[in-house]
Amino acid sequence: MKMKNNTRKATIDDLSQLAQLFDEYRMFYHKSSDISGAEQFLSERLEKQDSEIFVVEEDGKLGGFVQLYPLFSSTRMKRYWLLNDLYVNPEFRGKGYSKDLIDKAKELCRTSNSCGMYLETSKENMIGNQLYPSAGFKKYDEVNFYEWEVS
Image 1 (cartoon, rainbow, N blue to C red):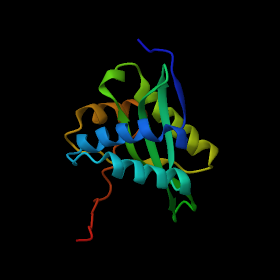
Image 2: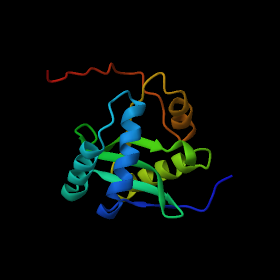
Image 3: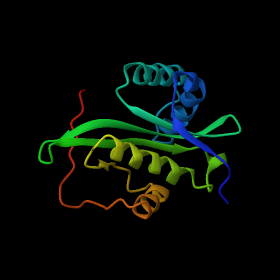
Image 4: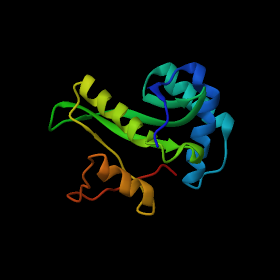
């Protein structure tokens, strides 16, 4: 059952709790815990306003977040959003908060006159691979995704 919640844009006042969630998210993807690094990274995103972060809050405690980065589609000649991070703490799961956060991301797309958003998730992310199609995302098999990393 969905509990009463508040899904809203994150502010610098959320930094401490948000950094904890972000650290949990990174550890889900097999990264080492780094709370101070998470705080620094998120502080820069919030201060520079180079990403959009929305949080879900229940009884004064943050339970999840979504972070989106702006991109542009040359062929569509519009802004496009990368849904880069979505995480809900295990204590808050099963209440519909992931879909609430995705709805906030969709609202951002509409209000920023963008052509949409995309995301990637690991093939092993069973929850995400069920969540995203149910939230209206279509799996895109038309292209190969490549990555180059600075070493």
